[in-house]
Amino acid sequence: MRDAIRLIADLHTHTSASTHAFSPLRENMEAAAEAGLAAVAMTDHGPTLPDAPHLWHFQTMLRVLPETLCGVRLLKGAEANAIDFAGGLDLPARELARMDFVVASMHTQCLTPGTFREHTETWLALAANPLVDCLGHSGQPEYPYDHDAVVRACRDSGCLIEINNNSFSVRPGSRENCLDIAARCAEHGVPVAVNSDAHWAGQIGRADEALALLAEIGFPEELILNADRGRLAAWFARRKRIAV
Ligand SMILES: [Zn+2]
Ligand SMILES: [Zn+2]
Image 1 (cartoon, rainbow, N blue to C red):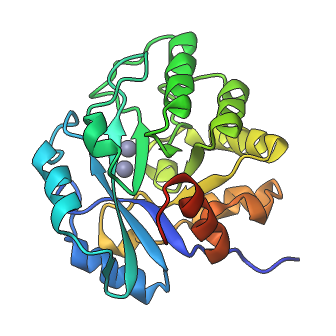
Image 2 (image 1 turned 120 degrees about the vertical axis):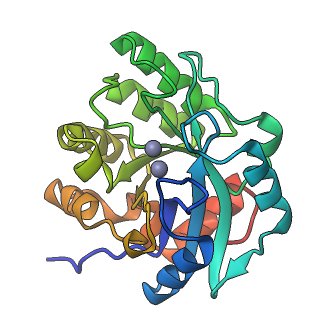
């Protein structure tokens, strides 16, 4: 039996800049240091979601925050909202292009669920968008889509697919979809990011349920981007041209 997989980075986390999250940035980074993480992406909600920060949050974040905090690499990012079925997002390209990590997600408050085909087209457009680095919690049951087509699009573009630990508690019905998405990723050799989607510091780096799901299907460890320092660094060097 292989050793339990340990995450070395968390690429989807919220700070209290999103007011339904409860820890300021420094507390998240302290928790990350305690958990032994090398990097954390701060990805607060795009401005269209209720109680998300204003655009100024993202502009100022890019200007003032350090590269490292509490000894942990701080990746400045966002969880941008899909706002139409053509892949439109709620943050300007100018800001997205300067971020270290961009997750794109669907939330019912920002995008009323449509048809299977519309959801598939949205994910295909997002996967092909070079400003998007990772498709967020796509296993949620409100937006069924063609897993195989989207995973193949990620293989072609280099976009990641997330296995989101928070989905198992806040988005019931995600598990079966996540199992199938992960199986398609294994089949097509597409890397996943396993993330906490933390809404308070105690959740940073915690993704036990997501990792258990991957273990259940024998998911290849080498396709978990944030389980290995060298793999993470190589991905960021290639896609984002930054040192992580
Ligand atoms: Zn989300
Ligand atoms: Zn989130």
